[in-house]
Length: 176
Image (cartoon, rainbow, N blue to C red; front, side, top):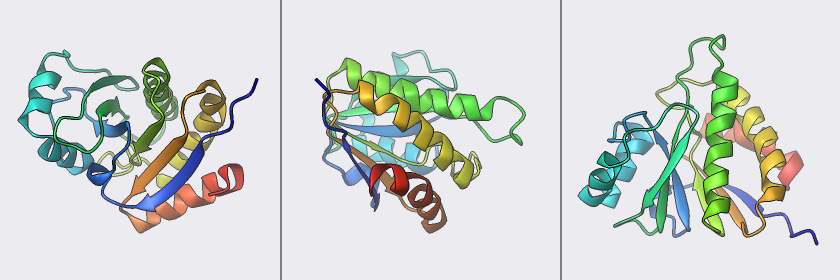
């Protein structure tokens, strides 16, 4: 029996305010905090998040790891390490797809029903938003049918140009 496709939303909201099962952190390989979304999540979650991240031994680009959400309204944080854009000749597309795929695999493994993503790598890592949105659309189309428990996927966007790119790529496929 096929389960219904999860609802996909794009909203202009601070990801740290969302009461979902998990928010995805656009993390760096150390998992020890940084700027942008990563820093905001660490600040909102409190020092317990950093303490748990110290026990994880980092995370390679393209991979993801899960922690508790601590002081966040979200129950968990999935730390997904996206690639730094270097012109597109260093497997950046495959690495970006991999970090979304691995985050969704963690969602499945934990039976999570709701997840919120930022636009991974589209901020300080300079991944072109249109290109990233196309990769995300393909990855979601491939992965969501495998995610039986998942009911809601939120993309929390703060940059209007990134939001526009994601709406262009995702709306025709997911009826946003």
